[in-house]
Image (tube, rainbow, N blue to C red; front, side, top):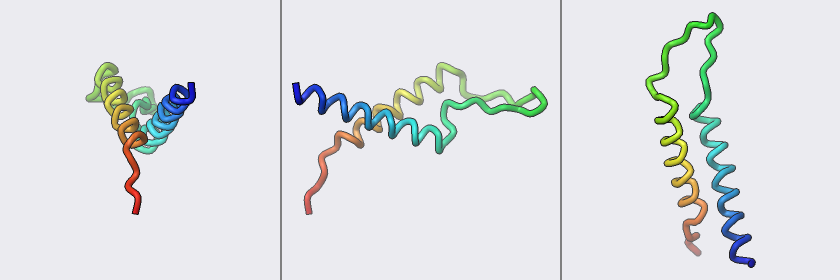
Length: 70
């Protein structure tokens, strides 16, 4: 049971990392135009979802990577 909780914890950490990176890079957020007119985004919603899923996978890899001992 401890292995399951440890795996869940790394997933939670990776999700938190994803949220942080996405917020810093403005990934997945809608840009609001003050006049109601905005430049259409080149990335469609589906593309943004794919990008976020790829980013989450990279975050999991980073969190689960073995730490080198010096």
